Image (tube, rainbow, N blue to C red; front, side, top):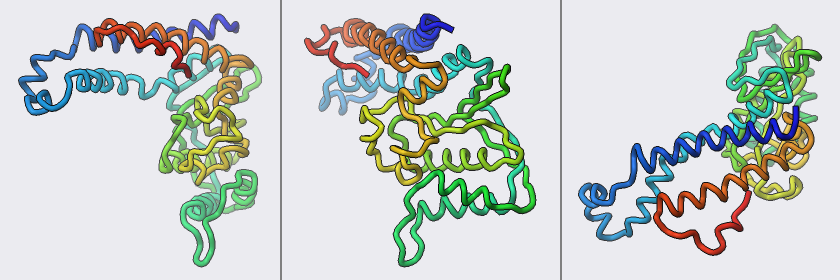
Length: 276
């Protein structure tokens, strides 16, 4: 594996998706002003066409990019590991009492006990309590966002990959999955993680988005990987820096094209300053 391999893989994913978006908005399904005026005369009379032209692009961009993080993680994982699979099912046996304790931990994080404050997340403490549970083994299947395996060592890892500002429900579901994976007997994975592809707060110690912080200590829990921690884990040291450089390079190229080819205007003077 080389940095060049990772660069090419990341570029391929982004350019393929962006080229498809550009083809759709410029050729297959362009914004036609006359059609917009005919279908929505009131809107056209009150709001500039450029606003609706922008939303036309947004709708055709958001859908294909909904899974972009997973796709990028897969191509990077395929270089560093022998196998990288999206949507992998992992089935194992979990003690009945462990399942009950998982539900108990999640309930206390979501709803405070009577006359008490809501429990604060603490991964090590929670997992220790859950693993002390016994009981009849029950087969459980967990669907992972990303699963990677190294055949030589047999080590395998799973990841719940969410947008940098996930909502509470998404995070709760991810935590339940991760707790179940760690509770399987015998163990089916060497590690499972809640992964955010980048940190809008720059430093992990500053991460402050409240919704996931109900379920994880986002700054300290070892199962939480944010930005460089995640990319360098699945792609080796330096992968995150390489990833950021590729995105910023392609971003400048495509923003220029969108201004000129789709919006039909020159880019503003400071548009080059926008970076990930």
